[in-house]
Image (tube, rainbow, N blue to C red; front, top):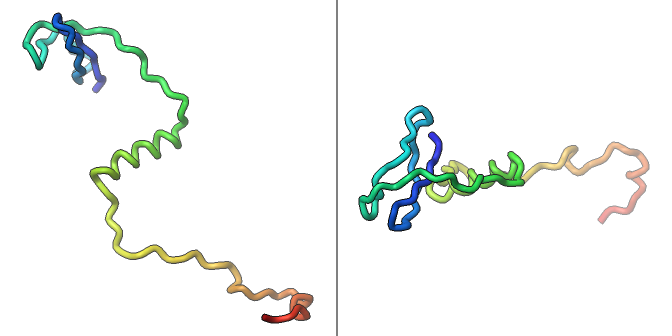
Length: 95
């Protein structure tokens, strides 16, 4: 649901979510109860890409819903076990 911004006659600004097909032009202010008109807010544009938004969303989500880990992470293994099959490497000094 979209988020709509309202401003009451006392100057209080607040946001509410409503379905697009039944958005109200006026609601009552949650602070003072006066009628509040819907207003046009500034667009919420960003230059961040989808990867950045994914990181932002996961960071916000992990603040109150941390991931559950069942085991410690293992260290990455090197391919080949550290040995080489090149015959020229056999002549190199060993430490």
